[in-house]
Length: 214
Image 1 (tube, rainbow, N blue to C red):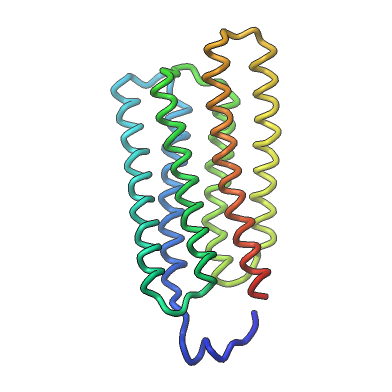
Image 2: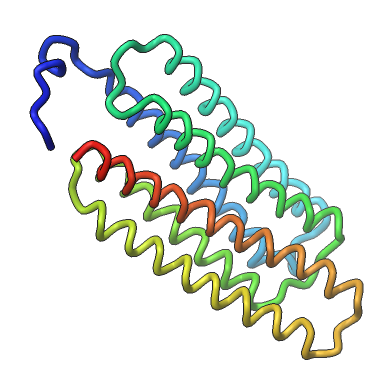
């Protein structure tokens, strides 16, 4: 990391790393709640399903509040630890990942999906894994260490999710399923892949920040 005299004269405000950690902690919590919903959907009562959906919604709302706090603090902070645009972009995209996850849980309710294919449960596992690794990413951004290894692991999970998506699409159109079920599950799989893509994009953002700063 390059030495900058300005850092001594005007210390950079590092609270944004703490805010990012708060965001990702909520995202990880939401991903685990989603996995529990997917894994037990067939055995849950309608009331239990609604309770689980409510918990995911609460996570999404907490994520929105943290994003709002980051943007507000960004407007009040003179010297930031990384570029202001990068902080803004990261905050938006971490929140977007949780938003997509919440959107999927709503679709499960709206579409009255009660039987979940095994591939959807595999997607839920990947989502928990990539969100958990994202938690390591913020610590690495703070110290400028192990960024390459962490982003590589995240991208590996994105590749795994990509393969799983194509496998899932092939199975949908190969197994002579009811057309309505095909439409429902196709939409579900597309959004599950979007969650993983969104998380992987954050890894690429962080990698770009480190390259930019040198």
